[in-house]
View 1 (cartoon, rainbow, N blue to C red):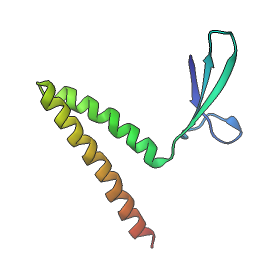
View 2 (cartoon, rainbow, N blue to C red):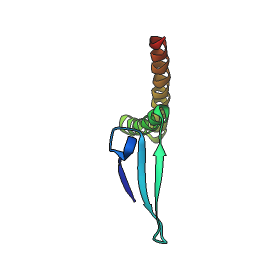
View 3 (cartoon, rainbow, N blue to C red):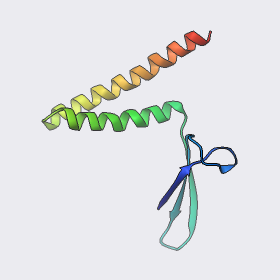
View 4 (spheres, rainbow, N blue to C red):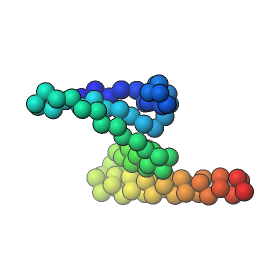
Length: 92
């Protein structure tokens, strides 16, 4: 499996949120799968992975790691909602 650069308009590599994945099956056929994320989806994926890293690196026991990771995940998503709300207010 090979992951290419993010693709923008005209399939030019840009810092976008659309990724093209070249996938090979056992039968020798090749197919391209495109994954598209909006801003909230990208923020959720970031929050998930950052929370996992924070939980593992900041706590000692497994239970504390999970609890802290969930806490960080909720705080990340809460920050996304607060920032979105603040930007909506500024735009008005």
